[in-house]
Structures are given as structure tokens and as C-alpha cells.
Length: 218
Figure 1 (tube, helix red, strand yellow):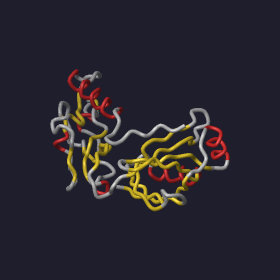
Figure 2 (cartoon, helix red, strand yellow; figure 1 turned 180 degrees about the vertical axis):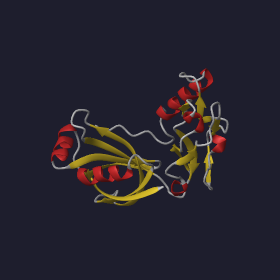
Figure 3 (cartoon, helix red, strand yellow; figure 1 turned 120 degrees about the horizontal axis):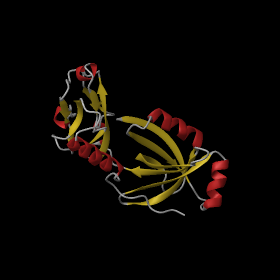
Figure 4 (cartoon, one colour; figure 1 turned 60 degrees about the vertical axis):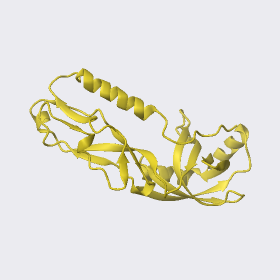
């Protein structure tokens, strides 16, 4: 899993007016929370944070956050849990950091990447990928950036399931081994059972990840 370093400062001003003032000064309001700790209000450099997010490219990443000032100071291992973006200006408005212990297992949604071009597609079939990600449980640094499946040998009517995934050691796959990841079909419409599988996968992706909910902040 990707590891990145960032710095932040304990925030001492609050409220909507204060948040707008921070943004004008090139800072993004943030909050750090987690199990067993009181929430800590932070501010981060917007330009540096934006570049860090671009480097992460929506991948799972453990951020070593060096917090300066106040009682919450020190280095902490966190995940970027949530981002609020201005819908008009497309600028950062707020960030949530969730503190984790890197030596304890946690559940991550890991993307599945499909490589190659299926034989069945060459013969006029259609490739369907009901599973765009799967759930893995393990220590953060043991979780891969993605899992790959080679579809080259798939003929029309063939499929690959979670049982065909190469799961890294020290991690556990939480999805059903019979869950369809990819298939080649001749129909322009996905078979009913695969459509249901796709809908279930989409619903699972939209559900919140395991962990505490972000505390409310004024």
C-alpha cells in the first residue's frame, strides 16, 4: 500500500467565517478522529494537500500526518476518510482524517483491474465486469493497491470469480469465492443473475466502510 507524508497544524479558530478565512489564506480546515481519541481540529496547506491527493490517484494510502501544535501534536498514521469539495469552484472545503494502528487489521475496498483482451470479445462477445472492487482485511501495509485478473483466455460464456483472484498473504478476502468478477456474453443485456450481482456490488461500494463515523463539526 502507498505511504505518504503530510504535515498539519492544530486549528484554534472555528465556525463558517473562520473556515472561509482559512481557505482565503490557502489552508483547508480538517478534523482528525478515531477510536479512543477525542476529535482534533486541524488545518492543512491546500496546495500541498491537493498535490498529495493527485499523487495518491484515489488509491488506498496510509498517510503519516505530522501534527504541529497543541495537545494533539505528533506523528499519526491516518487514512483520508472524506473530502468536501466546492461543487462550483472544485476546490477543497474540508477533510476528514481517520487515525489507524498500522499493526492492526482493517477492511479496505481494493480495486480489481482487468488486463488483456478476451478471445470472446475478438469473436464478437461483450465483456462485463460486475466486480470493480473486492473487500480485503489485513494490516494496512499488507493491502495491495489493486488486484489484477487476466481476461485474455476468456471465450464467450466464460467467467472468472473471486476464487480466481491472487490474494496476498496475510490478507483475507471477505467476498464470496463464487462472486462473478468478469464474464463474456453474446447478449447486449447482462444475464439477470449477473445484473443482480452487479447491483449488489454497487450497493456494497456505496455503503460506508468499517470504522467510526466522522463527528459532527460546526
